[in-house]
Image (cartoon, rainbow, N blue to C red; front, side, top):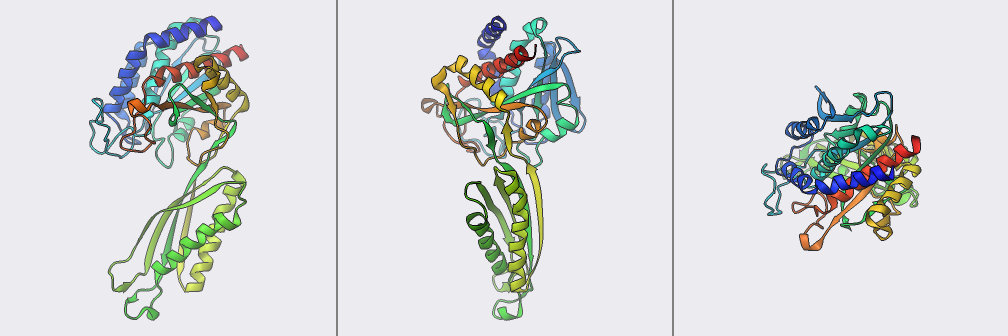
Length: 397
């Protein structure tokens, strides 16, 4: 297996510049969640040329590419997301987005290029593989629903014994890999609150029920849930993102709509929060003579890595970048990631790929209009993912 790993890494090095160009092509033509048709076709054409069996779907733009060594054997899966964000790019790079108001500000172009490049590097090794390989190119990671559920329903994990994924990370330097045992990322839920009051003239507020005032009191009480009702050893966040209401400056508002997100890293806490929120909203509205409607949508669960799969990532990462470049992230982050849904069903691990290089101006945070990556990180990501897949094959062969 070590000889195959050396050959795989040599193949990765040989196609480095081609993978850079693949990434730049995808970057120039970003597509929003649910619209990834061009990206999918671009990836499909490359992988068909390298002998992959391709599956497409009528209800979404996901793509599954299988490298079959033996139809009777199981699969190791690699996942890459493809969608971009509604942000106007301001990098000034020659490969900047050509689509007004849309850019790859989260690095999914890099993830897709890493997936395609690794698939290309594995193709010549097909006859030597003790298991099959599956590359899952996923749409709609940035959407609230997430594209992983659709792919899972369509059989993406059938026959899969392990799955790996990565995310570029501007908070680590190029040449660094971040790992985390257990819970790595938070659950990500959304909610909507509607407050119903009674309209009146602004000069006679006692004749109405001010929905704006009630909403402001609800916002205040919701923040007390985190500071006073949740164990501080189990981090959680309630954030209000929008508030809409009112028609004129001299009319008491009778309807306000609020939306927001809830993040947590403990499922027991997560299940308690909606009840706490509704208790708080109901009490406030009752005391003010208002009515309410509350809707809570459970989104992606916590991302929980499998310890044995993290061990594999750490082992391979140390081989690729050296022990000093492999960083224990220790604490989870409150961002969400729908890779978590794969990990509910199959053992696997998600890791961070450092892409920060100050000289190349690649240290801007994700979702920033100047976000970019250091492309020297692309072969590093390919090698860690590919080496991890081979380690799984070694362990189950």
